[in-house]
Length: 281
Image 1 (cartoon, rainbow, N blue to C red):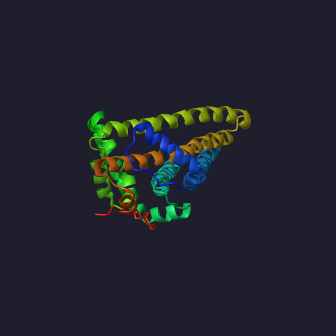
Image 2 (image 1 turned 90 degrees about the vertical axis):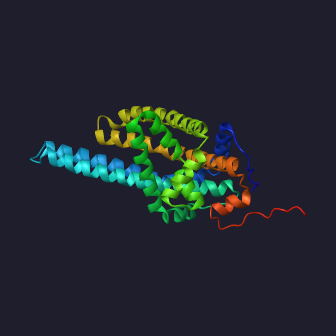
Image 3 (image 1 turned 180 degrees about the horizontal axis):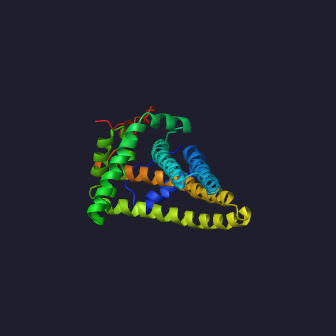
């Protein structure tokens, strides 16, 4: 495996290198995303099917509509919890795998998830704090909300790469983001545009396919639509993770001038960094 080049990168450089990492590790990255996203997508499809089915039964029986609504609401809240937790774990596993690949090493799907599951509580707590702080900023005014979001967008990479706690990871993200908010905003804006570019055509095609296949059956139509919604997520998540890791490294290289050995140590990697000949004094 070729040695990674540790040098400051432009926005286009970050995205180009992220794309190369994504291409080289496509099967592994997609497998990591699919392990979580596929069950969540199926859970959503089954849950909606049950709600539709119970609603149909309620229309033809003495079941109170309030009972159906309450049951559906509780089920949906539980689903949101599963989605939130699962997304944090899946994202962190992708970050771990991408980080190892960028350093010239390798982390299997199992190794990535095993590492991340030990930090699941930390990752979830950090995500909750970031969401609450960002929401507070948006409630005060749009601009503070955007700034808070950009400050803490690298919290999960910092936790995974440096083995930090929730609050420490947030502080580390803010430290790296200072003076680089424009670059961070542009990188994630481009990722968002790529996500939209993939999502909307697939959803439109799924709607047409659902109409042709379902023949008016709402359950079949809903299932096809849901499948179309989590497929783009599985495809885009690894690229987003790769770009996040490279942005994190870029900011560390610019601010701290870290070399390969220091970056490998900061990730807690079990492998040793390659020996680098030292100049004679």
